[in-house]
Image (cartoon, rainbow, N blue to C red):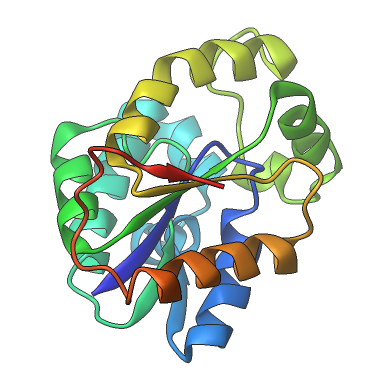
Length: 186
């Protein structure tokens, strides 16, 4: 079983994933890092050479691989849920937690993250807040579809987010595979 963290980039998936995995005694895998390892090039290079479709193909290969793991916290890229097959794999591999934040917070986090240039290329010509608003509008229904639990990370530290997920996890007796019909909300 895996515990998946989904949400828009800049919501804390990678940082929270490491903290949560440490608390559970599990491994943590950052899907974007695995894509770069598997492809042998940076995400920015993948986008430059083949655009978003090439990146999504690499991402799907990695989703299929990582969903076979056991006792792992997986920090998925923000768009991992775009393809129906990826959603199916992620949802069937174990519980899914959606980390949320508002547009202004995401924009600020992305702006101050040193990995933004190399790991987070703009996905539209709009860039900035306009891009975040547009993409969140498209992805929110997909995040909702997959989520067993949601955490609004607004004003929370990564340890606080990790603790809230851990509390949910233990209260639900280490929930089995995703049902995501009625995701609880924190």
